[in-house]
Image (cartoon, rainbow, N blue to C red; front, side, top):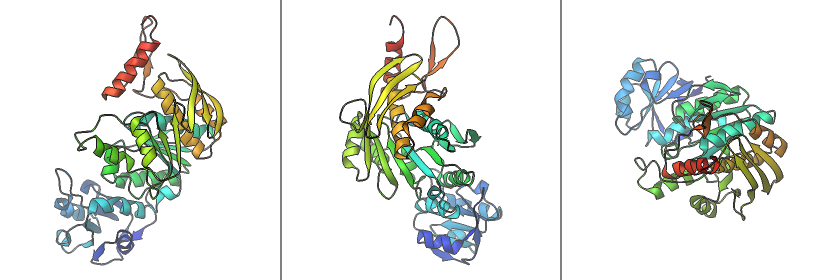
Amino acid sequence: MASDPVTLAALAAATGGHLAGPGEVVITDVTHDSRRAGPGTLFVAIRGFTVDGHDYVGAALDAGSPAVCVEDAAAAGEAAALVVPDTRVALGVLAAAVHRDPSAGLAVVGVTGTNGKTTVTHLLEQVVAAAGMTPGLIGTNGARIAGEPMAVERTTPEATDFQRMLAEMRDAGVDVAAVEVSSHALALGRVDATRFRVAAFTNLSRDHLDFHDDMEDYFRAKASLFVPDRAGKAVVWVDDPAGRRLAAEIEMPLTTVGLEPGADVIAADVASDLSGSTFTATGAFGNARIELPIAGDFNVANALVAAVCAAELGIGWDSIAAGIARVGRIAGRFEIVDAVEECTIVVDYAHTPEGIASVIGTARRLAPGA
Protein backbone atom coordinates (compact mmCIF):
# COMPACT_ATOMS: atom_id res chain seq x y z
CA MET A 1 0.00 0.00 0.00
CA ALA A 2 1.52 3.30 -1.09
CA SER A 3 1.88 6.03 1.51
CA ASP A 4 1.00 9.68 1.05
CA PRO A 5 3.33 11.26 -1.51
CA VAL A 6 6.45 13.23 -0.72
CA THR A 7 8.58 15.39 -3.01
CA LEU A 8 12.06 14.81 -4.34
CA ALA A 9 13.14 17.93 -2.44
CA ALA A 10 11.96 16.39 0.84
CA LEU A 11 13.95 13.26 0.07
CA ALA A 12 17.01 15.36 -0.66
CA ALA A 13 16.63 16.92 2.77
CA ALA A 14 16.25 13.49 4.40
CA THR A 15 19.40 12.08 2.79
CA GLY A 16 21.57 15.19 2.62
CA GLY A 17 21.83 14.73 -1.14
CA HIS A 18 21.48 17.44 -3.76
CA LEU A 19 18.97 17.91 -6.53
CA ALA A 20 19.59 17.94 -10.25
CA GLY A 21 16.35 19.18 -11.75
CA PRO A 22 12.98 20.08 -10.22
CA GLY A 23 12.46 19.28 -6.55
CA GLU A 24 8.66 19.33 -6.70
CA VAL A 25 8.50 15.93 -8.38
CA VAL A 26 6.08 13.76 -6.39
CA ILE A 27 7.34 10.37 -5.19
CA THR A 28 4.95 7.67 -3.97
CA ASP A 29 7.28 4.65 -3.86
CA VAL A 30 10.95 3.65 -4.09
CA THR A 31 12.58 0.74 -5.92
CA HIS A 32 16.09 -0.54 -6.62
CA ASP A 33 14.81 -2.82 -9.40
CA SER A 34 14.27 -1.18 -12.80
CA ARG A 35 11.66 -3.85 -13.60
CA ARG A 36 9.50 -2.36 -10.84
CA ALA A 37 10.00 1.22 -11.95
CA GLY A 38 7.01 3.25 -13.04
CA PRO A 39 4.98 6.41 -12.49
CA GLY A 40 5.54 7.92 -9.06
CA THR A 41 8.39 5.53 -8.25
CA LEU A 42 11.91 6.78 -7.54
CA PHE A 43 14.50 4.43 -9.02
CA VAL A 44 17.65 4.11 -6.89
CA ALA A 45 20.72 2.96 -8.82
CA ILE A 46 22.66 0.56 -6.56
CA ARG A 47 26.18 -0.58 -7.35
CA GLY A 48 25.90 -4.32 -6.66
CA PHE A 49 28.45 -7.13 -6.60
CA THR A 50 27.86 -8.06 -10.24
CA VAL A 51 25.50 -5.40 -11.65
CA ASP A 52 25.56 -1.61 -11.52
CA GLY A 53 22.11 -0.09 -11.25
CA HIS A 54 23.35 3.02 -13.01
CA ASP A 55 23.28 0.96 -16.20
CA TYR A 56 19.50 0.66 -15.80
CA VAL A 57 18.62 4.32 -15.26
CA GLY A 58 17.38 4.59 -18.85
CA ALA A 59 15.15 1.54 -18.45
CA ALA A 60 13.62 2.98 -15.29
CA LEU A 61 12.91 6.30 -16.96
CA ASP A 62 11.43 4.55 -19.98
CA ALA A 63 9.13 2.66 -17.60
CA GLY A 64 7.78 5.96 -16.32
CA SER A 65 9.80 6.76 -13.21
CA PRO A 66 9.70 10.53 -12.71
CA ALA A 67 13.14 10.71 -11.04
CA VAL A 68 16.20 8.68 -10.14
CA CYS A 69 18.70 8.57 -7.30
CA VAL A 70 22.30 8.22 -8.48
CA GLU A 71 25.87 8.71 -7.37
CA ASP A 72 26.85 10.43 -10.62
CA ALA A 73 24.58 13.19 -11.93
CA ALA A 74 25.66 12.43 -15.49
CA ALA A 75 23.99 9.02 -15.26
CA ALA A 76 20.58 10.72 -15.04
CA GLY A 77 21.00 12.79 -18.20
CA GLU A 78 18.26 15.43 -18.33
CA ALA A 79 15.98 13.61 -15.87
CA ALA A 80 15.15 14.84 -12.38
CA ALA A 81 17.70 13.31 -10.02
CA LEU A 82 18.75 13.09 -6.41
CA VAL A 83 22.53 12.77 -6.21
CA VAL A 84 24.08 11.12 -3.14
CA PRO A 85 27.59 9.83 -2.34
CA ASP A 86 26.39 6.25 -1.77
CA THR A 87 23.03 5.08 -3.08
CA ARG A 88 23.03 1.92 -0.95
CA VAL A 89 23.45 3.98 2.22
CA ALA A 90 20.62 6.26 1.07
CA LEU A 91 18.24 3.45 0.11
CA GLY A 92 16.81 2.69 3.55
CA VAL A 93 16.42 6.37 4.43
CA LEU A 94 14.60 7.03 1.15
CA ALA A 95 12.27 4.06 1.57
CA ALA A 96 11.43 4.92 5.16
CA ALA A 97 10.80 8.58 4.26
CA VAL A 98 8.49 7.75 1.35
CA HIS A 99 6.49 5.36 3.52
CA ARG A 100 6.29 7.84 6.40
CA ASP A 101 8.66 6.11 8.83
CA PRO A 102 6.61 2.93 9.39
CA SER A 103 8.67 1.60 12.31
CA ALA A 104 7.53 4.62 14.32
CA GLY A 105 3.94 3.38 14.00
CA LEU A 106 4.36 -0.15 15.36
CA ALA A 107 6.64 -2.08 17.71
CA VAL A 108 9.31 -3.85 15.65
CA VAL A 109 11.25 -6.68 17.33
CA GLY A 110 14.42 -7.64 15.47
CA VAL A 111 15.93 -11.08 16.11
CA THR A 112 19.46 -11.86 14.95
CA GLY A 113 21.84 -14.78 15.43
CA THR A 114 23.05 -17.77 13.46
CA ASN A 115 20.37 -20.19 14.68
CA GLY A 116 16.94 -19.74 16.21
CA LYS A 117 15.70 -16.58 14.48
CA THR A 118 12.77 -18.26 12.77
CA THR A 119 11.60 -20.08 15.89
CA VAL A 120 11.85 -16.98 18.09
CA THR A 121 9.83 -14.84 15.67
CA HIS A 122 7.15 -17.52 15.23
CA LEU A 123 6.82 -17.90 19.00
CA LEU A 124 6.61 -14.15 19.43
CA GLU A 125 3.91 -13.98 16.74
CA GLN A 126 1.77 -16.40 18.75
CA VAL A 127 2.39 -14.56 22.02
CA VAL A 128 1.30 -11.25 20.51
CA ALA A 129 -1.89 -12.86 19.21
CA ALA A 130 -2.56 -14.45 22.61
CA ALA A 131 -2.27 -10.99 24.17
CA GLY A 132 -5.13 -9.79 21.97
CA MET A 133 -2.91 -7.75 19.67
CA THR A 134 -2.28 -8.03 15.93
CA PRO A 135 1.06 -9.61 14.97
CA GLY A 136 3.19 -9.23 11.87
CA LEU A 137 6.03 -11.55 10.85
CA ILE A 138 8.90 -11.24 8.36
CA GLY A 139 11.46 -14.01 7.96
CA THR A 140 12.82 -17.12 6.33
CA ASN A 141 9.49 -18.95 6.20
CA GLY A 142 7.65 -15.96 4.75
CA ALA A 143 5.78 -12.93 6.01
CA ARG A 144 2.33 -12.62 7.54
CA ILE A 145 -0.13 -10.07 8.84
CA ALA A 146 -2.42 -11.56 11.48
CA GLY A 147 -1.62 -14.99 10.08
CA GLU A 148 -2.33 -14.08 6.45
CA PRO A 149 0.65 -14.52 4.08
CA MET A 150 2.55 -11.74 2.34
CA ALA A 151 5.16 -12.17 -0.40
CA VAL A 152 8.83 -12.07 0.67
CA GLU A 153 12.01 -12.88 -1.25
CA ARG A 154 14.73 -12.91 1.44
CA THR A 155 15.09 -13.56 5.19
CA THR A 156 15.28 -9.79 5.52
CA PRO A 157 14.01 -8.12 2.32
CA GLU A 158 15.86 -5.27 0.60
CA ALA A 159 15.23 -1.88 2.22
CA THR A 160 12.68 -0.80 -0.40
CA ASP A 161 10.57 -3.92 0.11
CA PHE A 162 11.15 -4.02 3.86
CA GLN A 163 9.88 -0.49 4.49
CA ARG A 164 6.93 -1.09 2.16
CA MET A 165 6.01 -4.23 4.11
CA LEU A 166 6.30 -2.44 7.45
CA ALA A 167 4.08 0.33 6.08
CA GLU A 168 1.52 -2.25 4.97
CA MET A 169 1.62 -3.76 8.45
CA ARG A 170 1.20 -0.38 10.09
CA ASP A 171 -1.72 0.50 7.83
CA ALA A 172 -3.33 -2.90 8.55
CA GLY A 173 -3.24 -2.25 12.30
CA VAL A 174 -0.33 -4.49 13.25
CA ASP A 175 0.81 -3.86 16.83
CA VAL A 176 4.04 -5.88 16.89
CA ALA A 177 6.18 -6.98 13.93
CA ALA A 178 8.57 -9.85 14.67
CA VAL A 179 11.42 -9.66 12.15
CA GLU A 180 14.39 -11.92 11.42
CA VAL A 181 17.45 -9.72 10.88
CA SER A 182 20.25 -11.43 8.99
CA SER A 183 23.90 -10.40 9.02
CA HIS A 184 23.60 -9.69 5.28
CA ALA A 185 20.73 -7.30 5.99
CA LEU A 186 22.76 -5.45 8.59
CA ALA A 187 25.91 -5.27 6.48
CA LEU A 188 24.03 -4.15 3.36
CA GLY A 189 21.81 -1.60 5.09
CA ARG A 190 18.49 -3.35 4.47
CA VAL A 191 17.16 -2.38 7.91
CA ASP A 192 18.62 1.12 7.96
CA ALA A 193 16.18 3.83 9.08
CA THR A 194 14.24 1.21 11.08
CA ARG A 195 13.70 1.74 14.79
CA PHE A 196 13.52 -1.54 16.71
CA ARG A 197 11.60 -1.48 19.97
CA VAL A 198 13.54 -4.62 21.03
CA ALA A 199 16.61 -6.28 19.49
CA ALA A 200 17.36 -9.91 20.39
CA PHE A 201 20.47 -12.07 19.97
CA THR A 202 20.31 -15.88 19.97
CA ASN A 203 23.82 -17.22 19.27
CA LEU A 204 26.73 -17.10 16.85
CA SER A 205 28.43 -19.99 15.08
CA ARG A 206 30.36 -20.52 11.87
CA ASP A 207 28.25 -19.45 8.88
CA HIS A 208 28.15 -17.02 5.96
CA LEU A 209 31.94 -16.83 5.60
CA ASP A 210 31.39 -16.67 1.85
CA PHE A 211 30.11 -13.15 2.56
CA HIS A 212 31.92 -12.04 5.72
CA ASP A 213 35.71 -11.80 5.84
CA ASP A 214 35.95 -13.84 9.04
CA MET A 215 34.08 -14.59 12.27
CA GLU A 216 34.98 -11.21 13.72
CA ASP A 217 33.40 -9.47 10.73
CA TYR A 218 30.34 -11.71 11.14
CA PHE A 219 30.09 -10.84 14.84
CA ARG A 220 30.46 -7.13 14.19
CA ALA A 221 27.64 -7.24 11.63
CA LYS A 222 25.34 -8.84 14.21
CA ALA A 223 26.47 -6.44 16.93
CA SER A 224 25.59 -3.43 14.77
CA LEU A 225 21.92 -4.02 15.58
CA PHE A 226 22.57 -3.31 19.26
CA VAL A 227 23.20 0.42 19.29
CA PRO A 228 21.00 3.04 20.97
CA ASP A 229 20.10 4.90 17.79
CA ARG A 230 18.81 1.67 16.23
CA ALA A 231 17.12 -0.24 19.09
CA GLY A 232 15.48 0.66 22.37
CA LYS A 233 16.13 -2.49 24.41
CA ALA A 234 18.30 -5.59 24.04
CA VAL A 235 17.64 -9.22 24.92
CA VAL A 236 20.78 -11.37 24.72
CA TRP A 237 21.28 -15.12 25.20
CA VAL A 238 24.44 -15.28 27.31
CA ASP A 239 25.04 -19.03 27.45
CA ASP A 240 26.65 -18.44 24.06
CA PRO A 241 30.22 -16.98 24.17
CA ALA A 242 29.39 -14.37 21.53
CA GLY A 243 26.32 -13.42 23.54
CA ARG A 244 28.42 -12.85 26.66
CA ARG A 245 30.79 -10.70 24.64
CA LEU A 246 27.92 -8.74 23.12
CA ALA A 247 26.31 -8.19 26.52
CA ALA A 248 29.59 -6.80 27.85
CA GLU A 249 30.03 -4.43 24.92
CA ILE A 250 26.64 -2.88 24.24
CA GLU A 251 25.54 0.37 25.87
CA MET A 252 21.77 0.23 26.03
CA PRO A 253 19.06 -1.23 28.30
CA LEU A 254 19.80 -4.96 28.43
CA THR A 255 18.17 -8.13 29.73
CA THR A 256 20.32 -11.24 29.66
CA VAL A 257 18.76 -14.70 29.37
CA GLY A 258 20.11 -18.24 29.68
CA LEU A 259 19.90 -21.67 31.23
CA GLU A 260 22.89 -21.03 33.47
CA PRO A 261 22.74 -19.00 36.71
CA GLY A 262 23.75 -15.37 36.44
CA ALA A 263 21.42 -14.29 33.63
CA ASP A 264 18.65 -11.80 34.41
CA VAL A 265 16.05 -14.38 33.34
CA ILE A 266 16.77 -18.11 33.36
CA ALA A 267 14.92 -21.27 32.34
CA ALA A 268 14.87 -23.61 35.34
CA ASP A 269 13.44 -27.08 35.98
CA VAL A 270 13.53 -28.03 32.31
CA ALA A 271 11.82 -31.30 31.37
CA SER A 272 11.78 -32.52 27.77
CA ASP A 273 10.47 -35.34 25.62
CA LEU A 274 9.45 -35.72 21.98
CA SER A 275 6.22 -33.82 22.60
CA GLY A 276 8.09 -30.73 23.78
CA SER A 277 9.42 -29.17 26.95
CA THR A 278 8.30 -27.49 30.12
CA PHE A 279 10.36 -25.03 32.13
CA THR A 280 10.05 -22.23 34.62
CA ALA A 281 11.04 -18.76 33.47
CA THR A 282 12.32 -16.93 36.53
CA GLY A 283 14.07 -13.65 37.17
CA ALA A 284 13.64 -10.03 36.22
CA PHE A 285 9.96 -10.26 35.18
CA GLY A 286 8.78 -12.72 37.84
CA ASN A 287 8.12 -16.43 37.49
CA ALA A 288 6.01 -18.47 35.08
CA ARG A 289 5.73 -22.12 34.08
CA ILE A 290 6.00 -22.46 30.31
CA GLU A 291 4.82 -25.38 28.19
CA LEU A 292 6.53 -25.54 24.82
CA PRO A 293 5.06 -28.01 22.29
CA ILE A 294 8.25 -28.36 20.23
CA ALA A 295 11.18 -30.48 21.36
CA GLY A 296 14.82 -29.64 21.93
CA ASP A 297 16.87 -27.78 24.54
CA PHE A 298 17.75 -25.25 21.86
CA ASN A 299 14.05 -24.51 21.51
CA VAL A 300 13.83 -23.88 25.25
CA ALA A 301 16.46 -21.21 24.61
CA ASN A 302 14.43 -19.81 21.71
CA ALA A 303 11.25 -19.79 23.77
CA LEU A 304 12.93 -17.94 26.63
CA VAL A 305 14.30 -15.29 24.24
CA ALA A 306 10.82 -14.85 22.72
CA ALA A 307 9.23 -14.67 26.16
CA VAL A 308 11.58 -11.96 27.38
CA CYS A 309 11.15 -9.95 24.17
CA ALA A 310 7.41 -10.03 24.83
CA ALA A 311 7.92 -9.07 28.47
CA GLU A 312 10.01 -6.09 27.35
CA LEU A 313 6.97 -4.99 25.29
CA GLY A 314 4.82 -5.10 28.42
CA ILE A 315 3.04 -8.38 27.64
CA GLY A 316 2.16 -10.35 30.78
CA TRP A 317 3.22 -13.90 31.61
CA ASP A 318 -0.28 -15.32 31.18
CA SER A 319 -0.33 -14.24 27.54
CA ILE A 320 3.29 -15.27 27.04
CA ALA A 321 2.63 -18.77 28.37
CA ALA A 322 -0.62 -19.09 26.39
CA GLY A 323 1.04 -18.01 23.15
CA ILE A 324 4.02 -20.34 23.48
CA ALA A 325 1.75 -23.25 24.40
CA ARG A 326 -0.27 -22.90 21.20
CA VAL A 327 2.56 -22.65 18.69
CA GLY A 328 2.23 -25.26 15.95
CA ARG A 329 4.84 -26.94 13.83
CA ILE A 330 7.47 -24.63 12.44
CA ALA A 331 8.66 -25.89 9.07
CA GLY A 332 12.14 -27.39 9.30
CA ARG A 333 12.63 -26.57 12.98
CA PHE A 334 12.79 -29.95 14.74
CA GLU A 335 9.58 -30.71 12.89
CA ILE A 336 8.19 -34.14 13.75
CA VAL A 337 6.61 -35.84 10.73
CA ASP A 338 3.83 -38.36 11.32
CA ALA A 339 4.92 -40.67 8.52
CA VAL A 340 5.13 -44.17 9.98
CA GLU A 341 4.27 -45.86 13.27
CA GLU A 342 7.54 -47.72 13.77
CA CYS A 343 9.77 -44.66 14.10
CA THR A 344 9.77 -40.91 14.60
CA ILE A 345 10.96 -38.78 11.71
CA VAL A 346 12.29 -35.30 12.45
CA VAL A 347 12.99 -32.66 9.81
CA ASP A 348 15.37 -29.83 10.68
CA TYR A 349 17.07 -27.35 8.37
CA ALA A 350 20.18 -27.04 10.56
CA HIS A 351 23.23 -26.51 8.35
CA THR A 352 25.97 -25.14 10.60
CA PRO A 353 28.20 -27.59 12.53
CA GLU A 354 26.84 -26.37 15.85
CA GLY A 355 23.24 -26.52 14.66
CA ILE A 356 23.58 -30.05 13.32
CA ALA A 357 25.29 -31.23 16.51
CA SER A 358 22.52 -29.70 18.62
CA VAL A 359 19.75 -31.35 16.62
CA ILE A 360 21.45 -34.75 16.61
CA GLY A 361 22.22 -34.50 20.32
CA THR A 362 18.59 -33.70 21.12
CA ALA A 363 17.34 -36.57 18.95
CA ARG A 364 19.74 -38.99 20.61
CA ARG A 365 18.65 -37.97 24.11
CA LEU A 366 14.97 -38.27 23.26
CA ALA A 367 15.16 -41.53 21.30
CA PRO A 368 14.05 -44.58 23.35
CA GLY A 369 16.91 -47.02 23.76
CA ALA A 370 19.53 -44.71 22.25
